[in-house]
Amino acid sequence: MTMVRQTRQRQAVIEVLRASRAHPDAAWIHGQVRGSLPNVSLGTVYRTLDALVRDGVVVTIERAGQATRYDYRREGEDHHHAVCRGCGAIFDVEAEAMPCVPVAALPAGFRVTEVRLEFMGLCPNCADTPAEQP
Image (cartoon, rainbow, N blue to C red):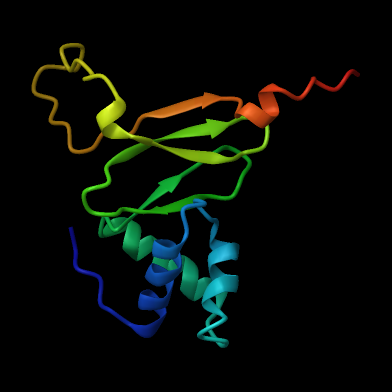
């Protein structure tokens, strides 16, 4: 893990992510950061997010055909995600609520460095909405 140099831009991005539980994308983060740093570019926000991901401060949630979403890693709040295939909402699922995952099926000598578990499905709002007819 590398240590990310603290700049005003990086601190602003971290503050925006800490304040949000919505798993925002870079464009939304950029809009929020511009409130305190009007001249910050979208490219700077992307580079900052990349550095924070490399440092383990932020994790990505990626879906094919959609913008990458970002989640701030709060110390002591280990969690996984549930993703709605209908509306795209992302919900936190506390890790303590999850059963232990057996590692017996992993190749011999495989060293686990991180576990990410994602549940895919429909949130209550989308599950209650009838599918559109063709």
